[in-house]
Image (cartoon, rainbow, N blue to C red; front, side, top):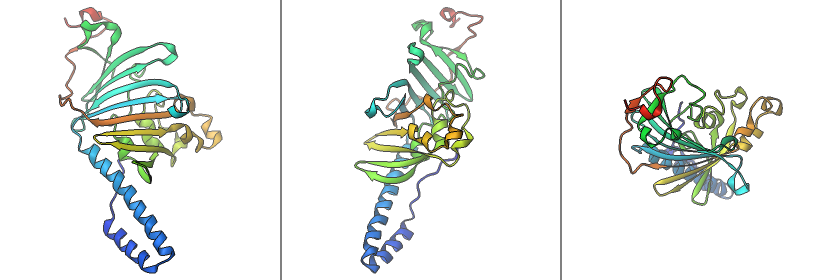
Length: 266
C-alpha cells in the first residue's frame, strides 16, 4: 500500500506567513490559521517519524460496534508484533464472535501464514499449521500487516489538546482491519475518508477510527451492498516493542489431518 506521508513546506509557509502578517487585519487572522495548520502538520510528521523509527512495532487493535464512549461493544481484540525490516508478523486474536470465546495465534513469515490454536493445549505451543491458502482460518489477519497505517496514511486536520484529528483514506482503514470483514475494498469507498484521532503518550501512540460515520459518507444505494454492521469503531495503540527478539519461522509445522496436535512435535 502506498503511504502518504505528511510534508513540511517550511520555506513556502514562512513566506506565506510573512506576506499575510504584512497585510494586517484579516491577514493576521489568516496568519494565525496558517500557523495552526503548520503545527498540525508538524505534529503528524513527528508521529510518522516516530513509527517509522521503530524496530519491532508492538500493537493492540480492538474492533467495537461503535465509539466506546457511546456504549460500543467489543467484537474482538488483536495483539501483534510487526517487523518493518522483514514484513514478518506475530498476531494473537481474542474474540467472542457469536458468543463463543476463542483465542488463536497467527505467524506470517516469508509470505506464508501459520495458525496455532489454544484448543491444542500447552504442549502444542510451538506447533503450527500452514493456512496460507485457507481464507476461512486466516480471516482475522489484516490485509496490510503494517500496523502503522493510521499514522502514515493520515491527513492532518486539527489539533485537539495533546492529540490531532486526522482523515484516513477508507481503503487504508479497510485493509488495516481483519481481511475477513472485507476481503476487498468496496468500490463505493473511493475518495471516502474516516475521521480519526491520534494521540501520542510518550512512546505510546493511541488511535481511534470512526468507521461508523465513514459509512455515512457512502451514498445510501451503494451502502446497501456493504456489510457496515461488521465494524463501527477501530481502537488501537502502538509502540516500539521492548522485546527485541526477531520474528522467526515456526519451529514445528504439521498437518492436523495426519497428525494430532498432541503429537505435532514428532
